[in-house]
Image 1 (cartoon, rainbow, N blue to C red):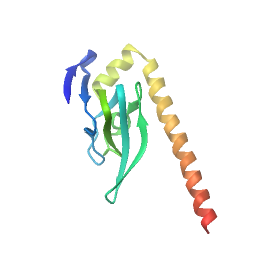
Image 2: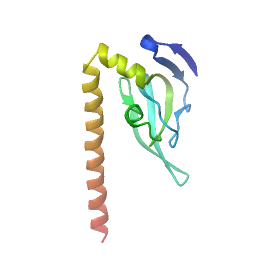
Image 3: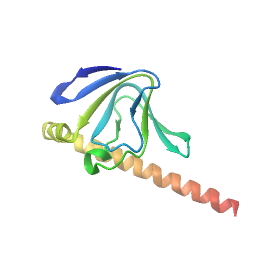
Image 4: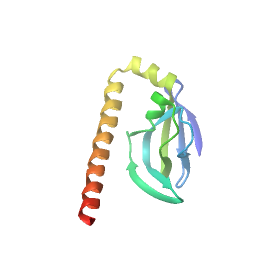
Amino acid sequence: MTSVAGNGGALGRLYQDGDIITRQGEVGTCMFVVQSGEVEVISERGGVQTVLRVAREGEVMGEMAVFDREVRSATLRARGDAYVMTLDKKNFLKRLHQDPSLAIRVIQTMSKRVRELGDEVARLRRRVASQD
């Protein structure tokens, strides 16, 4: 992995295929933005890994950590070479002041994910109900 200083104190890194960006269960203090390549979002339960989705260029990941500083709910792993920018809370807030539309984009991302999770819960409930 190669580190590069970015604008506004942001740090970008080039991760190679299979490199772990952050692990589920770690305390989060920053968010990530895929600059190029792809990143797998993986849930790990009982030794089993499940790819929840694949983040691509321009997508934000780990944004909840900037707001709540709780443990990470998923592992992020490079899929092929991926250049990923890291933003801590201070730099995120600084960028918000420079570009307030960033807040809307983050809210849109979080809203989309909540909607997708709601759809997934509904699908799983229907599946369970049909098995009864």
